[in-house]
Length: 240
Ligand SMILES: [Zn+2]
Image (cartoon, rainbow, N blue to C red):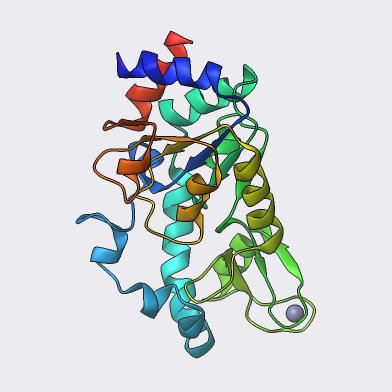
């Protein structure tokens, strides 16, 4: 019933932009951050995932991040990622704005993916702005605890947005433009707690939420489905 209602909303409210968070990737075996079993229940993000921590002790940040990359590269896209790729193929979603760094949307076949918190695709040098692709980063991590810039020798920074850093400006500007032009933003697997991304649904003319558990904006959503992304989105695609 609610999946059918969301399918009807998708058809009626165009253009639509999708916004995804960690909740869509938990079904691929990737832990989220903020739930009781999430990553931040185990480690303090300010110690391993902040720009201050990186400047203080980059090798510790890379120790955490190296393990993360390993988990993310092992993971496969799930039914939720595949359903969203199908929604895009049918012309019912312009793009996917994602807080996830795992690249699973691209691997599921989505073409226009805006990674507003960066991704594991590359690492960058804060000194000379050199960008090293993932393959080069992994090759260096075989040899040393943190990868170095091939131009200036500084330790590279992971290509993800760390706490205390600004979001990649081109990505967040495009995401904001898309949200402002959208008749519907479909939010999947985000508790809408991390700003400024959490404010994007409020920029769209309306928004719907698919998430297991409450979100910060449930009361303002046009439609809320409390459920897992994979089963819910598969049902939505079948109802289109
Ligand atoms: Zn450099």
